[in-house]
Length: 529
Image (cartoon, rainbow, N blue to C red; front, side, top):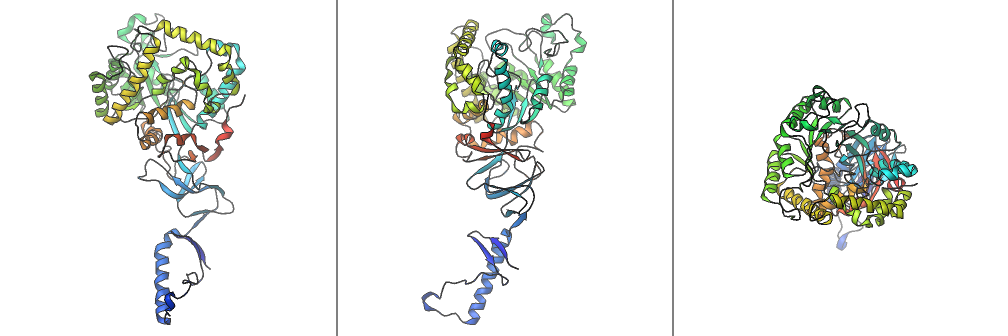
């Protein structure tokens, strides 16, 4: 029997002799080959075919999904694999090659002219926080809140985030998100570790409240400690244990003294070191929320694995965006230590929506928020809520005022990010969605805007892909399952029309999201009321 082979030039059918005939269309210049010469020529041609094409003999795959003839881009590869065939079976990547053919029982997906990349990982989200409606709107319009929550998991998928990590998760939010019919792979840090009276724990509720924070006793902030709580129950070890018992893959501690404008109690270095030791004993990744020169130093002194947030707070003129030597020095120290960093530039840039609501006109927003929620934000009631929020920010801001401070913070975050690139600080991708009040950090789209921020600041596109995939997976101990397109790993993938190594806008060209090996058309994820 003959067989089909795919050569570098075209596919041929080889008969029993192993050659296709006629080999020659005629005798050039009237030359006549002798029988002996013809035999030698045929023999040489057969050898050429055997050597040059044996490696391309097609292998029939009769189970699973076969993505055919796609350009495979994966961060562990030195270069893209063109004309690749990828087999998905049982929720995992089963085979990768350039000679795989779907049989009659396999499901075929044509990848011609398309690009296949690993599913993206956003390792800094807060799924239970509202990225559109304030507390008053949630109370007044419960149907809008229900529609918003129904879209949140779909929004992350629509923008390619097949895995997310929640950094301050309440059990009620975990139960809600996990019960939705379609959602990204979901990991958590449990409740973040906070200090009483400080950031995210200004008012400590009753210990029976579901909102009771994961506190640790900070001796240097003892005056803020609730008298009803036994200090012995709130050691660093107990705080880490509470996170671990909730299924956390890592722990996060907050070091926030007030964003350079307030004076709040915070976790000090010695306490951070105790948390780090307890996290190591539990084999958990240790992350520190920090965005100032002082808090970065504290995180580095405590040997944090990851610093959550870029650097935009330092002493001196609030309106000056130029990083001082102290900022450059602490960035260099992070590079020397190999401490990973989440820049989260969009968490600051998202504040612009309070001043400029043009994000409401971005067509991509309909993948993130339901039409009814967008209509509310455009309405007089939505505008009134936005104005009230702006008034609060202006009242709370010291001189020179909210607008100049916001502009400087955005410029500072961009400037220090460029220093991080120059110093080769190891970067991992996290969007901090939503990190601000208002609608400036919408789920899914906020991550896409953060990708744009990285590219605009000069990050190479290959670094962006790696930071959102393999480097993120490695940082959180997930690289055995996620982060690259390799046999045996989870089949969480993206099929794009455009090349993400050519332009960051390629992430707007996602056609299909594969989650556990099942294809989901992106358009099917668009929000509805």
